[in-house]
Amino acid sequence: MQHQISCTRCGNVQSPATNTECAWDEINCIECGEFLDTYGHWEDSVSPNYLIQTLNRSRMLSLQMARESRPVNDNRGGARVSA
Image (tube, rainbow, N blue to C red; front, side, top):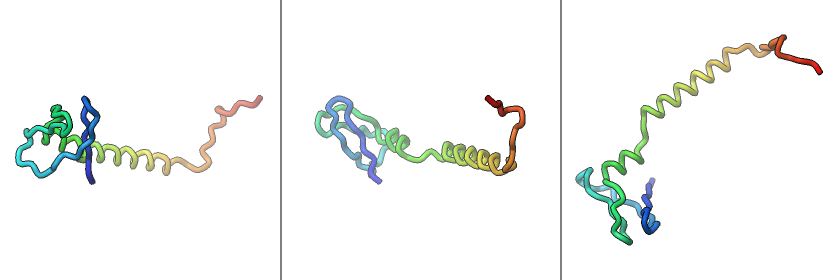
């Protein structure tokens, strides 16, 4: 999957090379030469964050378990108001 980075000055969109040796190497715009990011920061921003994914999955599981544990005919008698 190719992640692209766009220039804030000229709007050029490019795909940075991922085979760099140093994380602090700069990513510059091909068209205007504007500094965009470093390879290390850019790779961190496009890589999946496993802590956030785990948090979201555990939240989804707890919500699903709460829905399944509720009885099917769970009616609240006082909540209904007639006209």
